[in-house]
Amino acid sequence: MTGEGGASTGSAGAENSAAAENSVDAGTDSGTPRVIGGRIGLDDLPLRESLRGKSAYGAPQLSVSVVLNTNENPHPPSRALVDDIAEAVADCAGDLHRYPDRDARALRTDLADYLSDATGVPLTADNVWAANGSNEILQQILQAFGGPGRSALGFTPSYSMHPIISDGTQTAWIDAERAADFGLDIDYAVGEITARRPDVVFVTSPNNPTGGSLAPDDLRRILDAAPGIVIVDEAYGEFSDRPSAVGLIDECPSKIIVSRTMSKAFAFAGGRLGYLAAAPAMIDALLLVRLPYHLSMLTQAAARVALRHSTETLAGVAAIVAERRRVAAELTAMGFDVIASDANFLLFGEFDDAPATWRRYLDHGVLIRDVGIPGRLRATIGLPAENDVFLDVSRTLTSDRKATA
Image (cartoon, rainbow, N blue to C red; front, side, top):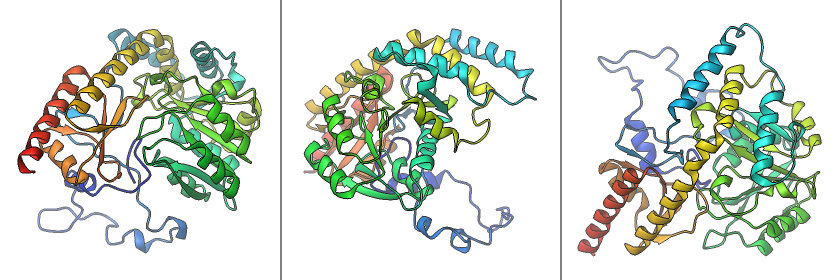
C-alpha cells in the first residue's frame, strides 16, 4: 500500500524499488552477517488468511535534497516552542516511574478549547479523545464499531490506511469509487451506502491524495443515508476554507465522529498526536477498547505545549496555502492537469508512465509521491525554495517530454 496519506489503489513499484535500495541486506553472501531466524519468511507463519497477500503501509524515506512526499508541514518548530517542549518534558521526567493520566484530561481540555475556537462549536473535554496519531484513533473506532461480521465503506482513491485498519480489525472493506474528476458524486455515494449498508463509512475531507473537500449539506446527506457510524477524516482540515464537520455533531450525535491530527497543520508529525470530536457517548465506547495508559506523559506534555503555541504555528498554514496556489498555477501554465486542492499537496499529471516519471524526479533530487493512480503523481507543498526546485525539475521534464514527442 502507499504510505502517509497515500491512495488505497495499491503499491507503486518505483517507490518500492527505491525503498528496497535503502534497506539492509539480510542475505548470507560473503561479508553479510547472518540474520537470526532469517531462514523463514512471512508465508511460513500462521498468519490470518484475510491478511495474506496484503502489503504493509510504507513510504520511501530517502536522503535527497527536496522531500515532498509525506504531506508534512515544512516549517520546523520555533526555538521558543522547542525550548518550551524541552522544559515541559523535563518537568515530567521525574515522574516517569508512574503511569500517565490514562484519560489525558488536561490535553483533551486543551484540544477542546482549540477546536472550539477554530470551529465556533462549544466543545468540552468530554467531546474529545486523543491517541498516538489519527491512525490509532481510526483503529479504536473500528475496534468499537467494526469487527467480524461488520463492514466499512470508503470512496477511493483515498487514505490508504482506511482499508488497512479495516483488515487489521477484521472489518470487511467495501470499495466505492470517486468520480472521474476525483470528486465525490453525492447521489452515487448515497446510493452505495443505501445499497451496501455498511456499519462504518469513511469520508475524507479534504480528501487525500486528491485534495477536494465536502460541503456540510453533502455530509448531511451521507449521514442521513448511513445506517451506522460516519467517520469524517479531517486530517487536513486547517488548510481548507470549508466549515468543519464538527458543526454536525449535535445534529447527528449517534452517527458522526470527526477525526483530526496535529501532524499536518501543527507541524507535529514526530509527536504522533491524533484526536477526534464526537458526542460523549462515542468516547465512552472507545474507552472499552483503548489500551491502558496508551498515551505517554511525554506525548501529552509536548502536545499541550504545541497547542499553547498554536497561533504561531498555524500562521504557517496561510503561507502553505499561498504556496499551494502558486505551485498549482505554475504547473497549470506548464500544461499539467492539476486537481483543485484544499490541502497541503497537489495531485497532478497526466503522465504516460507515472512510476517512471516519479523516478525521474528522484534522479533530480526531488522526492514526491506515486500514490498508485495511473498517470498521476502527488507533491507536498514545501518551503518556497523547495517548491522552486520542484517546479524547475517539472519544467525540465516537460521540456524533455516535448522534445521527444
